[in-house]
Image 1 (cartoon, rainbow, N blue to C red):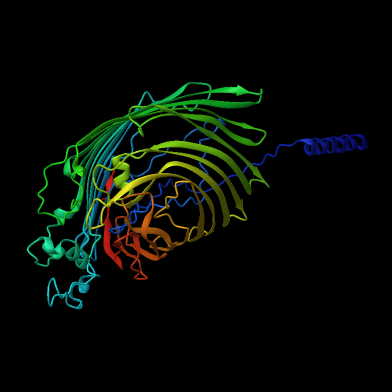
Image 2 (image 1 turned 30 degrees about the vertical axis):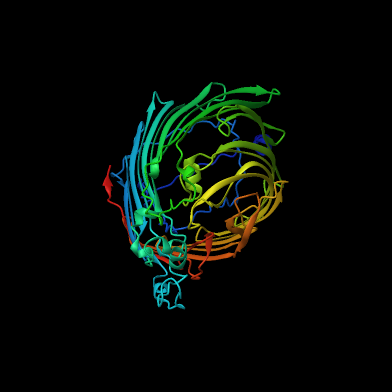
Length: 623
């Protein structure tokens, strides 16, 4: 018995020692209970309404928390097997209708519909309209001034009354996507837009002082003018189609190709046809035995056919935006311009560094349609993480060539006249970006960038127009240094705060041309509150620093007279939405709560307050 007991004890000890050396952990857990498969219903698509200011034309690129990288992941995760279980038909929300009405008679309508879930097909259509039909400073019209002794005795015109400041934007678009053989995507989209903006940048007193004596010495105001006589309207139609492979295996060839055509049709005989085509091929390959890289080649072409054949204009309509001083303003012009680009680059990871290395070659036959100039830009970004990914540093150099077509010009400034001068802007960007994750709730991003501009597009008032209410682009070379940072705090997705800003330093060249309508700094504060997915609150504060503007161009040399400074803008916007259920919600939006009368452009004051009330409704759909 002693021998048997000793043998059993030895076996137990050996088993214990083997268990200690075994790194696997095995334990069975038995769960007793009924399994109830549930498909959670997602919340409806929530698109916040926008109130467009009648002169909101400066588009600042606030570069918060963005480091441009086109690094493609070269890690191939293993495929996960899927589970099958029966469930009740889900309620889908593949549409929404949004309606609103604001002060200044500002209606809003937004309708959207898309297809339900499908492995191969996806399509949708959207209609959007927003406009404003009010007047700027209505009560200023009745302000009593000193009588004009010689011209119109006993009649006073207010310098503060700008009358109608109408605008209208309507967009209709549709898209279609189809997956062929599980690895090829075919896509196409078509859209149409109609945009109208009134050139309201003059008061009644200015109008009468410039043109009052020309029509039988009878005073007239904005209200006596047909709105079509001092506005610009555009119709824009475009179509795009593309094909790309969905194969993500880096050991196989991938490709993508796109073509597109667009036509801009403007008043007074303006037309611009834009055609483009681009394609990309990429292929993965092994590097340094244990690493992989991906090589890319992008090729692109853009062509523009510009035609301006002005229609006859009645000389008696002197108060129109085409109240011109020089008859040659309406000369017929036609041009064919092109831009070619080639961008070879590689993406790879080496010793913890993410590297993007390439170059961009651009042929510029846009600035001068008769001459092709080759321009070379860097395309290099290196990124590395430190301190367990709590800090990331990126350094890079990039550049490019941007065509300032008639369509691009009118989107940048809607108060530009027809037949504007066009050029292509070259820019070289040197930048550094650092990100700190202090915790899961707090993140800091800082950025420094220095940009070299050649033929950068800026705007000044066109002296050909008598009312000083029409702009034209001008081009100049300069450098800009940008220092910016933003800090973000997120508390369990219920509250998020972000404070950020930029400071700009401009270096002028030997031309001594001023840099107009570019701010010295900007600061934003954004707060978002989501209370139990029922009440959504968005609050934004904005400060845009002073900008240099001008009153008139002397017409003889590159020097301005009567230069003026546009005061800083202080903005405060509030948006509140109450979600009644997944199908119905109500919203209220208020812009410019500080009631500030600010300027984006010389002679174009803003409205003091924009307010809108509305609702969003979705029709539930059974799959």
